[in-house]
Image (cartoon, rainbow, N blue to C red; front, top):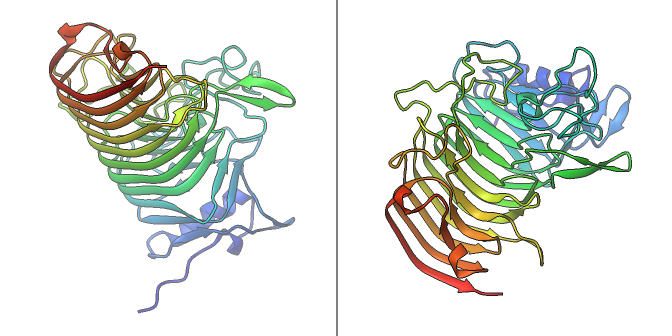
Length: 396
């Protein structure tokens, strides 16, 4: 049986993002994939770039193929590159979705705006700590929020994102909230916490690569490369007081309030073959849960610090912290973590900043001080039944 022909935005009229979203709507329920090609046959002539004024909104059972294309946020855009259509501004009830697949063919580039309207997370004020042309503009939010994220999905099962490069996102590159049974693979990042805008160096904070937020489980992350302004890969279960989804005052579109009964714990995640560094000097991989939410059954296998000569990240891997959500998570809430095959040039190879139990750390090569290869910052009382073996230190 012949495969169904794809649908392309070149078959529609309107702005670039309007045409892409019309293609997504046309493909809904048909089994046909949407292909964004290299050549954009726009009303004003053909060009090799797709400028987004708003987010591409993906529906259940959507396959989006990015074929050697360059997608860029316009200077008008204060929105994501791509978002699951079940969430967004003012959507308080997020209906679960499934079957969203995004993949690149050839060279695919997703790039932030030349003049970003807003950057950073919801804790950052525009024009003070992080850049944004909306700084001081009446009627515009003066904080970052979830609209600054590159690819954002919430309550999506059976998903994949693979084979693309993201440059200078306005906040986290990819953020998943309460998503499950998915895969992220072959993704490259290039951001450095600062960039040149009109000849001046500007700070852009919170440029993580991949973030799994509250409630994510059964996810594979592999073959991640490049450099990021903040943590390259992060699993962060940090509940808060916000209970309304679609609130522009948050970096989580699905609300930060813990649903309790273990629904918002992060579990069953594999991270392997990460080759990169944090150009902002933070961490390459980070696992963080705060009191009240568990993080467990995580495998990290193959983490290679590619920092250039003379540059050090804070840690190749950091587990836990004492500075979020009421301090160190209670002993027993971060557990069954396996860390294997880490090559580090950072200050710490493995930095345990919170509690950890019933875990294994092995096969570590650390360029630096012996005491910093596997360091327990809050003290041994926060560790229980953690096996550490095969640690090799290369002193500079």
